[in-house]
Length: 361
Image (cartoon, rainbow, N blue to C red; front, side, top):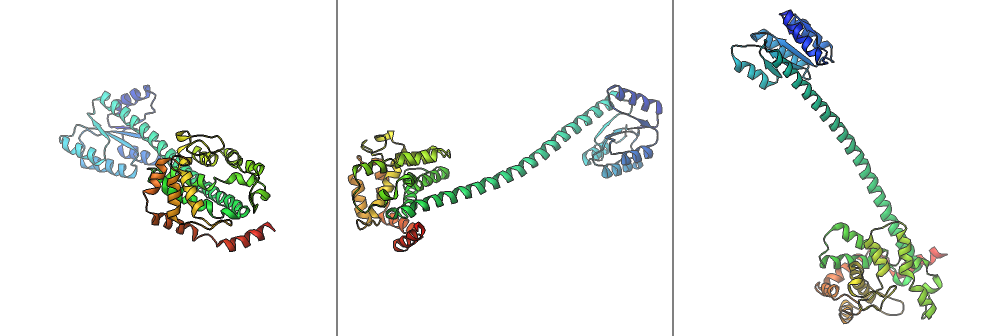
């Protein structure tokens, strides 16, 4: 919209803008043009050619800007005090100013305001898209947390199901998982996600025993050679189960390789040294620590000092020497504390046996 008391000049400016595919209309009444701007939200730009910008015109334009902050106001003025115009520009009452007779300057100011509005619109669209993305991210995060909670519950239930079948190793998975986390930390593993993967791998390391018959798993006497062959299948069986749900490699490596020995005499693949994945070498020491110090029906538990002697004696044969050194770097009282903090949450073996028998019935 163009206000200019010089009707011919106003029409000429409108014609120039219309030739640029803008929809421009001119009028000779500032109050009428201002009312139109207030009533027509589609009007984007007002060119007010006022000559000297007197107090009345300045007040009217400033009020119009307050009522419609989105309306761009360009003043065509030759005000004797340029500083007054600059103050209006600085306050936001005006968006641009040019000489009334500078038609090209006024048209250029219009193009500048159109460009600003296009940029503002893109910014608004981007801001709305960002808000939508944040809302979607929030929903995704909540869904992810729910899935993680379901996963953790499934993991715990899976290990509980295994414990119900194997009274000898009841509570073993929870304890050895804590040992594995602690030992990995001593070896420099700091990434919380890596530590969590090691913990999960330790919890699931014996999951393949679900496929071993109860008659073998709970046999009170020595196992035959054929029965041992079936027991030795449990790492591969467990890995096969876990691979189907696409867990991270560290978890699968602990499950598959936790019975490998550093000297190559372990199973299922007879790997040696650093060919054994690092997480499996860490787990082997944690596993031995719990096996030596835990109660078994066929023997009494030994203390931490005896466990350390046994682990050190097998450094380089069963165990990675670096993992053994890391284990020895922590005071035995700290290992005892880890064990106590874990096992105090587990029911007594006698109570567990009663519950397991009831569950099996």
